[in-house]
Image 1 (spheres, helix red, strand yellow):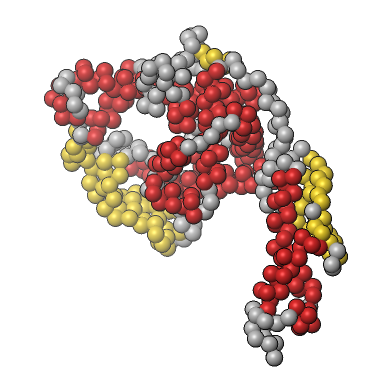
Image 2: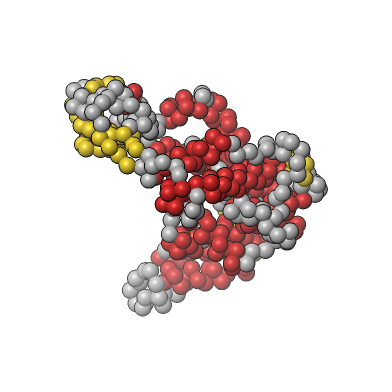
Length: 465
């Protein structure tokens, strides 16, 4: 086999492959046997039809095509290896010449991994914000804990923000009830939001037995985004009574004996969480510094595919949250064009980061063992709310293991880059990253930073939605 490569762009190559007939012959013999099993020819048993008869009955061209269909993928992979090309997508293949008994020729255009030179990443410097746990942060967590142990008491007064109400609700379009937009006896907390626009405003001031009609837009179903009339009736108003925050509550809600001990624990846990957030910010800041030093050419088809996938994911999350895309843009203070520009920027940065980290992982010869793969799959399953075993089965059945291995290698490469960097907070203090544990605590000086980087390396796009 002879092959040549033409560089069409930094991210796209064209292979021209010539396969001599002797290398096609095994596939040609196999094609004759396959076709012999598929046809009935008088005077011959199935599978025993001679090639010359098959040529007359089916045509030599059909046999050649069968053989070519088998040999082209094999020779394409061989050509990739010969020229040290790493494909990023399926190729566009065209058979350009068929000389029977001599040779065949085909071309394959494919997006390939760009060749990039990563500068020395040791000693990068980055800055992140200070981590502070305010009294308001602690009070918010304490309030949430008290609400978990709160009780509801019916009140004879109009509903206010924070009250729980029992409501009947029906949406109509042109005077007709909307299918699936009717509920009865539903408990709802005033001010919670996320259900129907205008509902919270309508409920404030309503007493048990009151009803009101207001205009809104549906966030799901066939009429999503369309204007409807919504009638809501309140059948009960309840206020939440919270337990006193004292030693008795501390013993009820935790393993601590006093409220001071519980408060200290809340503050410590918040501090650990803030430290993890700071570590994630440090990772992003260091990676951004590295990205600024490298010009990474990106395959436009890969960018387009990733943009489509990101949009689809965001739309699914919005639908699950009961939000329309227009309401999301309004909440984010973005126009459609600003959203698209921001999404494309994030996609390009993410793809460039992948190429750089793959390059670093290769240079460092980073490997992945079975325990690391198992732990990564468990973590991914937990993030997506799936059963770990079902997630693992799906990954194996659909051949996604190479993707998971690549993710782990990138996480390990990023961990080493971040560990070698100097990261300071807004006050000029060096941020401790090497010994940071997955729960936000600081371990012994020989702690392993790679697990932390893997924890922090989860895709952040859902949060953007």
